[in-house]
Length: 117
Image (cartoon, rainbow, N blue to C red; front, side, top):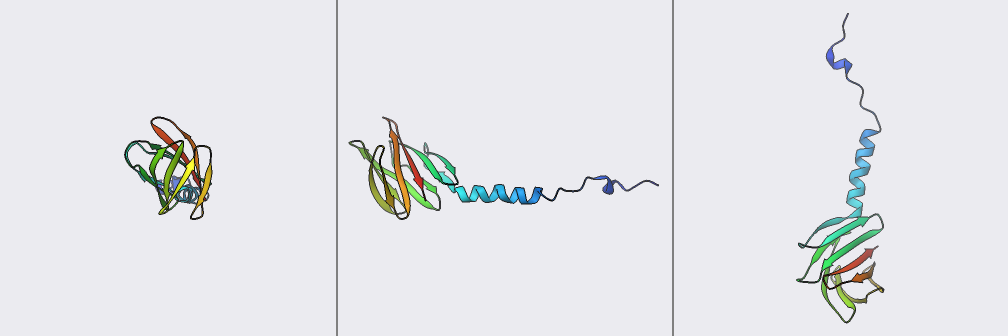
């Protein structure tokens, strides 16, 4: 007696579905969203690092908020986070609406900012 072809398929592993859900949830938690052209984001569970180009008015959507480089001069970046504008020197950090904003470095072409909850 032969078995129908459908019964020859291996059973779906019970851990596959929870694992898929975990991967999707982690993506949502990191909260990296789209941004202006030339803006790069790298998000993890604890926050996001944003590389803003210095030209234009680059912005991104991260961690459920908007972050935007308003300007940079005299070794200080003006950054709008969740609607509040803060001024942060390179290497320094400040708080804005429950987020820590740190300017990690700046070059002639970009400003790198770390935003954490």
